[in-house]
Length: 307
Image (cartoon, rainbow, N blue to C red; front, side, top):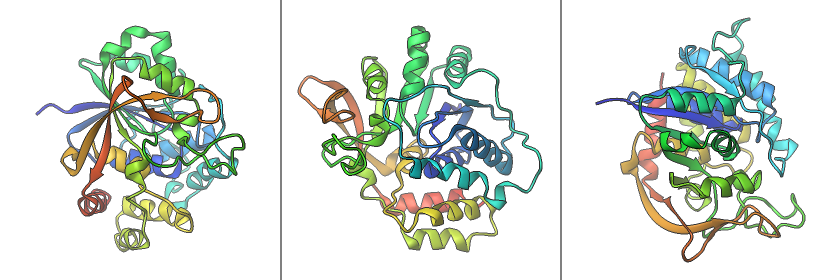
């Protein structure tokens, strides 16, 4: 069976690195590169941490590109500073050099080149905002035909968003951060005919990062990847944290763990609900991950990181 071509586009949050790690463990996937969108991070440490992780995993042949896009509504600095913490973890700094290459071209141009050169349509695995994708589509509309589908962690359909009103005055709390950072770009992608499979907060809210799971990662600490995953999740365990990006990425390996549901939606780009993914009659058809076998998911990630 031929391998599935996947281009990763993450935005440097703690779980973005872990989603990238998970993707690299999938035998049936051929990763075409990693784009770092500077949203839930500071760009330089996020790119550095990504390259060090690929080195650690023995994937130093994978190209990394730094997108230069910018969103409308910046992530809180408290979230973004985690990229510095991850980049400084001792397990990622056992060498004085980084082998994984950083390409000279901006991430949006790298995405265009990868799609143009791919021998068949590519899955975009996006765990941050859709801005790099939208920018690439604006610059090279013909690449739409080379995108097989977008699997995206984003949106909140029938639950409250995670853009809290006390963090972002003037908002009604309906938006999810990956949409809110740049709702105009999300709306641009909604205008395409590309199949979109979303992992919304409706599902991620039901799959928390628990102490039990983190302890199990720690018990596998003789495996460097499991040790790194446990360290990353230990940083966020005092807060309510969920398997956002990792849950979305695991779909690529085991779609049978999930149930999808079709919705008609639109992206709200202005006003109090800016960044909301709203269900509307006659809207843009998307598929949302609706249910997941949680125990199978937990077992799978522990197994994949035991290396």
